[in-house]
Image 1 (cartoon, rainbow, N blue to C red):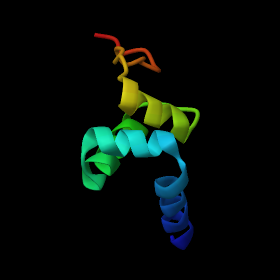
Image 2: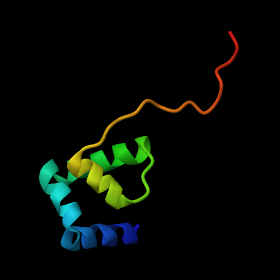
Image 3: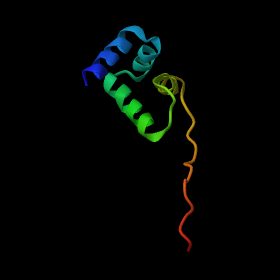
Image 4: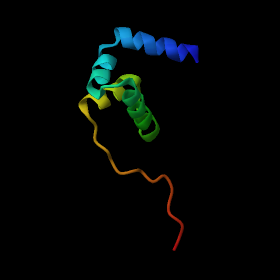
Length: 72
């Protein structure tokens, strides 16, 4: 848990992308709510991609169904 806080503090101080997203969204609470939404709803390869999606926007696609529906 402490590692998560350390990473958060390092990002606040050193990551320009994190700072730009934070400034755009206006509050840290809003930032973390949006990150959580993207994290649970979409597949990303990195936190950088999540930050870029929040800063520049993203396009939603229809969900991919992984199995056939039951016969009717």
